[in-house]
Image (cartoon, rainbow, N blue to C red; front, side, top):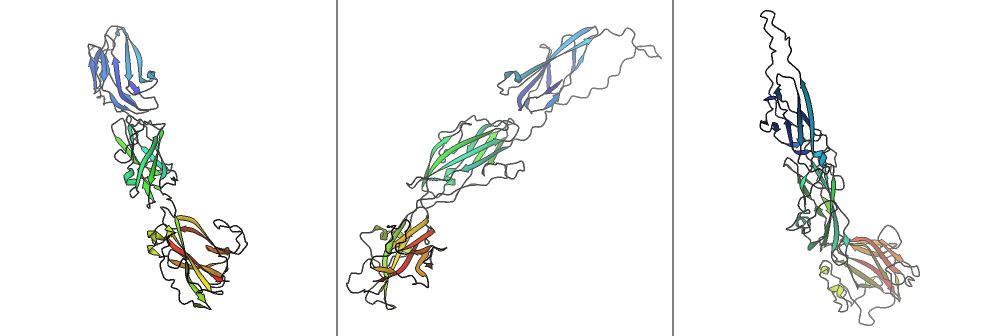
Length: 465
């Protein structure tokens, strides 16, 4: 008797039996099979896992009666595997053998004249049924994140997508996906899970990433070749620690043999990145980088005065003034670069026409994120004109950035600074597009929010008319 699994999935707890026809004597059955004489049925031990395409043979030996008879036996097979089409869970086959009358003239021994007795070799023991080996179970997973959405209130929301694929030939039960958000976001001020959703699995609505790290509920099954996704969103308060952060998800499931298979996610959409047939060596973490909120503080001071090439005496510019009308000069970040200079020169007559007055505009980046594409505009005050060669020919301003002081050209070129001549239209953030007196303009790609590189200044001189 031959039993085969012709379905598209593995079968569990497969039972094989044979209903012995009346009139025959059971001589032998395979190991693992038992003959019940009362029920006239041979029942074999269940096969726990019968692989897709597997085949196994059973050899039964019977002794037929001496009288002519027609013998009909029925073989049956069934499985407990879940199958929507219940007709695929069992099968039966009927065999009929006609036994004729004894030979009236049996062959005889020429020497003795006695009937010859056929020699029957010792039967070979029937081996225990051995189903075709199953292909090892394989599970793979990937993790993707969307660029964080800055909520403009100190929080950012990031969306995670976990994709799980069963690349083996056996269904995986008790599927689970686990992520430790405390470990992932170590260093942030806080986080909260906003939502979790899946159209493929039963999710765990209590998931919070801290003490409840399971993304899925109970009884999830992933069939061979199937893929399922989980999406969840987390609102993070990064503070000044904007990253990068590194995230990984661990998934696991149990195959029909009771073996637990697992995988650690890799970044992207392909679980087997190197294409070697296994996902266990593809575990690149997924990177999360928050942007934070930029914040720039500006403090403008008069920092020197010159007459005929020498410093004007009697004015102490090397002083720290706390302007009561401006909270920006009170920030603690100025500890790395004190905004020295005067807000006003109170004594009349200290400066006169033809003197050169130096202005320094200090900047401090103290937001939770870098200040990218920082644009600065300082119009030339009325009654003065910009000095375009203060730091060399065509170099009218000085930029201090990340501790380095660099003269800037007056032209629109590769450096950060320029001078926009009077009446030339000035872009934002210049207060007047008509630009009546000209303006010093800076466009700095990034001002870091990390000390000590979060402070700097723009310096230039004007001629008092």
